[in-house]
Image 1 (spheres, one colour):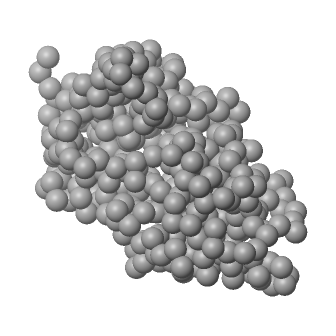
Image 2 (cartoon, rainbow, N blue to C red):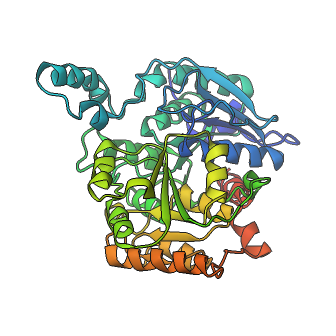
Length: 427
């Protein structure tokens, strides 16, 4: 089939119809009932855009086949959700599955994992078998003004590229993470740079969750604007969740550990602080890290909580003396994760072990949310942890308080307005 050129869009009916609200079709692999942080950006933006009067449709898999599920995650009532059958494999934890296995047993596990590794550009690419034709059909039926694909996984953008070529619809790519230079990969192994070039040279607009991602895409000579639309704070999600002061100083980390994410410097620091402290890790904690903690003799000072639905995880965040933010130096100074904004919304002190001088450090310092130390500075982390515990014991622990202006600027609604402005200016 011959593709529709960008100049032919008015004739093909994909210009904005007079008097009609902007209509947006979002393509996302991570959507309820999938759980975890990857769901929040597309889910919250969809809800806020709908509140702004946008007619929002979402295409998501019938089964996300993700590691975690959260059946309690609410989908905004005004957002229409479409589903496409997911042919792809289920997510796995290769390191955990291979740990301790030897001989034929290990070879059997390696064989099961080999299929996922062979898929290009990522293991989720098989969803395109159904999501691409479904996207094209929905574009022709709904006549949206924009299709927005949100990654990871990077293969999600193929649906936007095909729909743009076959129908002429405008395509925006939303990048929550790097495509070509992901810090958890040592080398390009699946054509990630080629995919990044495709996104840069074909998408009508690109929005990125952090400045470093935007800088990467600008290096591929993009044909459209590349703008930063950061993650935002969902303050309303903490409504009704209480903080009940405890005698023991409780510091909580929520989220999973994989790749270069490393709790060991903090664990070393915790072992050096002689105080009544409980460190809670909520989410997936690797076996090797648990064994490392056991070797330090942390005992009941360490509380490991398996994955929880988001509402329960937020309740633990609010009911903590402090929160722990860990970003390894290897991930770079431009990393600005959604976790930072979630922590800020909880309005609890944050101990941030993040690259000094980086984007995350600057945000924590600007909001006066808590101490910032280098991620590998065990002595510095120990001093900061001990100081927070002493302040708590003396009743002098300062609770972050964001001004109304700062709250508005950090809100998810502000981010939705920024995204909407990008789409309208590129139309």
